[in-house]
Image (cartoon, rainbow, N blue to C red; front, side):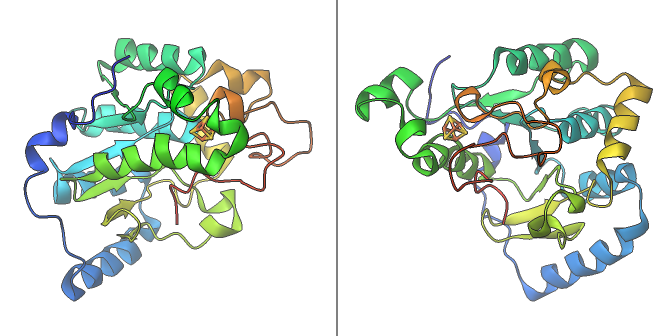
Length: 251
Ligand code: SF4
């Protein structure tokens, strides 16, 4: 894996243009569409997003079950949509393998976005693994900064969040302004349940991370993910032992 801070991938050519501004007009449009799409299927929501924002519409994925269902839908609706993954250097081999399976099944090459420093350089510069001493800093350096760079030139992206995942996510609009990254955030699965996601995965034989069958409902980087016990919260296995439940990617 190479770390190239200047490589902005397919969005690189678009990055020079001015970003989308959250004007009153745009925010009113988003609120209207969000309400209109409240009863729509995820596919209808994605179709609208593609028509409205492509080629400046993209998706970041960690290859979770929700992300896999969106990749499946996009393969039918708009397979040219650029999809990327934050390759922190700490992902499970199973996750890398899943990227290969996506390529085989859909012909979609999910692009890796790398932090500036390789894991070796990063750990050497910080006197050891930062995920142990300061996971917030590690997530900031290896995910958030990379995501900010990847967002340049984009007008909108798809998010795989579901409202029933946490109280924080319960009020997520279908379409809204992402203040953190300054672009439109589209959440086609907002009204879906975990059961809806897994029903589609089973019905359509969508590839998924085999770690889910081994006690990991939520898969992140290997140093910060453990299997959860029966009865534990879905995300309890992430940053176990730290007062931390999110990477800071969502508001
Ligand atoms: Fe670092 Fe852990 Fe965050 Fe991955 S999840 S970027 S290893 S702190």
